[in-house]
Length: 172
Ligand code: FES
Image (cartoon, rainbow, N blue to C red; front, side):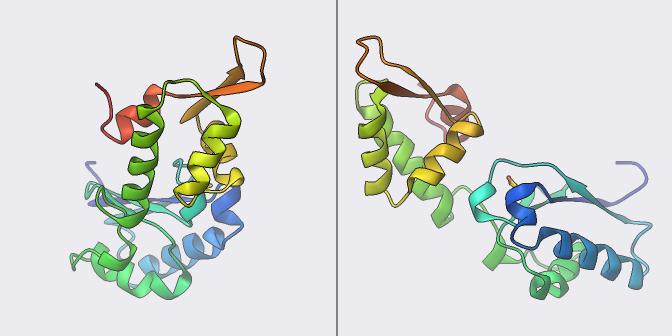
């Protein structure tokens, strides 16, 4: 990054857009310009960052910060961070935040069973961890799980992919 100090990527893919991400991106860009910060801070839209159920999401580089559930009301605090202020803790997605801890616990539980799991069992396990079928479908779409016909012909079976193992620190 040789011409900007920070680069903000605002996800405006379908799920985040459906929850107001385009307004967030537009307002953030406007506030950065209004404050004369646009020579130092670049705001771009981007495609999905695989956190579709907790958006709108944005990523700040080089800070390695992900904010989730961002609304237009949060923009002043986000801009304050971009100007060198503190990270906005209430929006921060980190390894130990509730959403990530819940996902890690779920995937860890899925791994203790003999994989691949029958789709119905996987769904029941997800439900027990507070995730619904739409979430499971999204995880499949994002490549965190793979669904294939079971070898015994009894329906579909689900395998946890390396992508989720790597993300949640579950690789052996
Ligand atoms: S749509 Fe924004 S993270 Fe997927």
